[in-house]
Image (cartoon, rainbow, N blue to C red; front, side):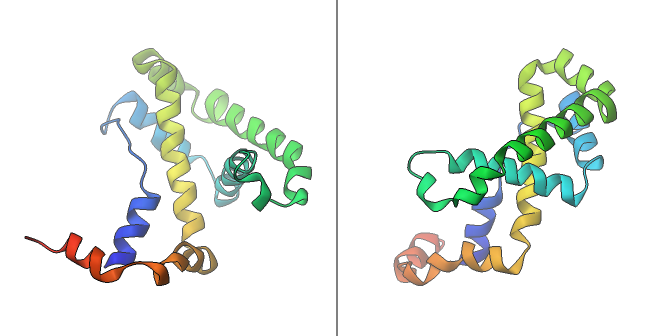
Length: 147
């Protein structure tokens, strides 16, 4: 139960848009018009961005940085295709309704989908749970127990 709770907490992003809003329509369109490869490309871009943080940089290989320009080009083409071609109508409606924040919210939803795909890999799931052996399970079980 603890593992499920932790994985759910780590993989869930807040999604402020309610169903049937222009932002939700855009989110659905983005999801419907991306393949597994597209979502992995998006995750690669996020990884490279996070790997540039000074406290994280040491954990990323030089090879990852070398491929970053190609990743940026692929990501730019993906964003352009989704917003200007595949989901142009939904993009315009979402921006009219919610401004630039609507685009951010819609891509957060797509990012969540991409992370769920990555986390379904057995190696990723094993690494996400690798810290469990260091948990104070008694203390956590007390905290999670109904009172």
